Length: 223
Image 1 (cartoon, helix red, strand yellow):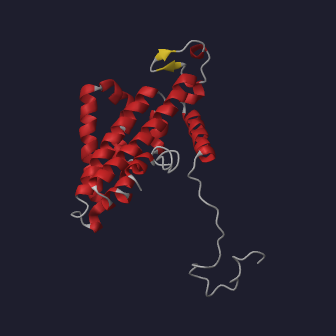
Image 2 (cartoon, helix red, strand yellow):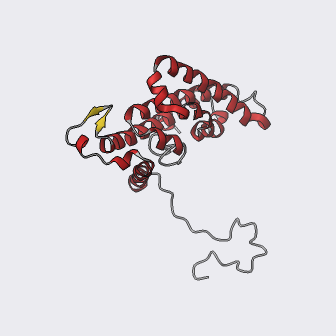
Image 3 (tube, rainbow, N blue to C red):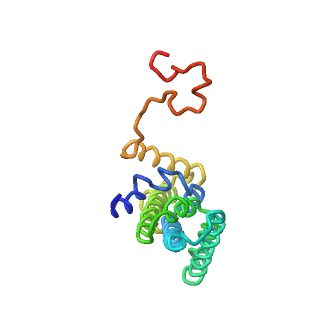
């Protein structure tokens, strides 16, 4: 995999929200407006980048048996720093994100990339992976936030939009509307994306019960 592929895979091919279906809770909760969606995306990307770099640097030092607790402690430290910065310089955003900002600690995307990539690869590749995944997460949040704010609230970044502000689809700002937009985007990615798995025929080869199974030909056509 080239450096460009390593970065770009998180945007579409392995988008953490629409393809891997990770981080669904903060995605639905913070995508009611573009501002909160962008804030959550940037905060999560910063934590992901810092944690991936540090975990990659320490991957040969952290004992395998306690790697997950170590990852969580590192991630929690970065989340605390990001939360303090947001509270100091963007109190309105901190209030908008609420509990979901500190809950970045348990975001499946960050812990998943630490376990699946950062502890197996070098610092530069881990940083590119974090930036790509963070970009994919942020873009998805902003897209959902745009659709839900424009059509659900009739505004964009808080500014009223003519016609739409008087014909709001309020349900889009609620949980059912969030799931509806989320489902539409997943369907679009599955329809037009190039990551579809290849169809294959499954037989008895590799099955641990093949020797004792009375239907040894079950995987063959016509059996």
